[in-house]
Amino acid sequence: MTSSEKLTTTVSTKGQVTLPSAIRKLRNWGAGTHLQIEDTPQGVLLRPAQAFAPTRPEEVFGVLPHSGVPKTLQDMDASVFAEAQQRHAGD
Figure (cartoon, rainbow, N blue to C red):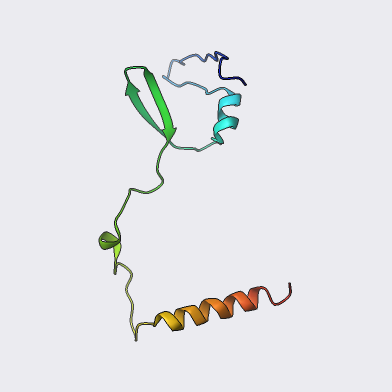
C-alpha cells in the first residue's frame, strides 16, 4: 500500500466501519485491538488505546502487602543471578 492510495469503507446501519486489511496489517491491529477515537479538524483520528492509565511511582508504591523483613538490593541481585544461572544451565 502506498501513501497516495485512497482506501474507502462504509458505515453500517449500526455505525460500524471495517478498516481495510492493508491498514490493519500495517498498524499491527489484530482482532480485539482497542482504539482511541479523536475528532480533529482534519477528520477522525484512530490510535491504539493505552492498556493502563498513566501512573507515577508515588501513586502505586506500597500497594502490595508485604510481611517479613524487607529484602536488600544485594539479596534481590543474588536471587536474579541464581535464577538466570538455573534457567541457562542447559545452554
